[in-house]
Length: 362
Image (tube, rainbow, N blue to C red; front, side, top):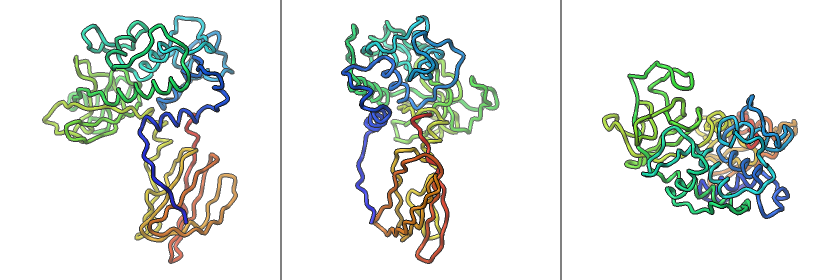
């Protein structure tokens, strides 16, 4: 019999556990976290790939160095101080470093003297105190060396504040339908897309209407809006998913989920569920699955996991029966294609395939 206890985790805690799993404890034997390791923690929490770039790397971050790809790409995107020749990767990270990089990787715009956002800019070092005050985040402006736990705690605090912040959201539709977007796509007013001033193209954002609690996940494929006070333009299709068109604008919260290609590849929502008409798996076997995750299968009707063929060709030959109220669990330990032979009590068998991916390396 296979059973499991369900535990609930907050998004912030899930992020923290994910980040801790990225690095061996021995790497952080010292009390403080280095600029290199700290920035990589911050970068990877955004679920955004570090793409190849022709940017000249920092002189003290060679190609063979851990974090080279992330640091060099971030330098090319203006997230780091590209005017300097050196990055000083082994120096201790300070709260000032951490907050500047957290706000920039989250594409948070600076705040002016009136508490309003400065459109289409990323915060400079001297604007961090105003942002910290705006989000009610305390930090030492002079900066003491940070520990890894302090950095994770700060990231959780900032992300919680950003997810709770309420934004004005509007829509755009017929006037722009068929025209080009800032990222070279044709605008389809019925697609689940949106425009934002600073979020990277292809970012997935969960938008929740605070009036009715309805949510929609959209992909950033355009720049805008440029009306003071507004933070997002939703396509007509995505806007009307969570609000009536006649409203024209709503107040909503944002949750950035990461780069669309990476998130959708590693968090596949396409499930193979049906063995036969009356035997349906819950939630089913996904086409793609993240290495280190736990697959759980159940059904109101009895089913059997007859065999699992691993990427290296080995078989389990489990012949494990699962009845109502029981859960079959599997934690894939290696990358590659897994083949499940699942069947019914009448002898019907179906093969389902699942590709296990190491999402931490994307």
